[in-house]
Image (tube, rainbow, N blue to C red):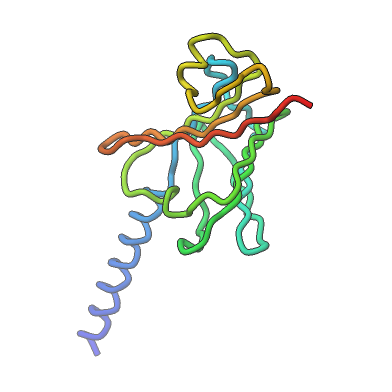
Length: 156
């Protein structure tokens, strides 16, 4: 009986360690950029994760976001709400969100396009036809290259 109790205690400690490690990986640092300039993320900012007809809301505190438990085999739609501005990204692979290193997400949008910004977003061919462009940049801090996801909003 005594060995059984020790076994269960060891098992519980292992489960808590695994849980703590998985929570650490899901904590993401955010920056918010408007027309090339970093802005403060307001306290009413939220992130909506939409997957399997469920919507999970996550707040942003101290420029950090905790990613909720998501089905890693499916894609997720994500809406970033920064006060008056909403940035929506459809069909993002969950595996892209759950990488096993420190990462910084830069979210931003442009309504004005200078030459410097045009060089950064070379995928866009004709900026005169755009109302705005918003992006989500994934910057790994330990190894690997980052990626960027762009959304363009055409002028009417």
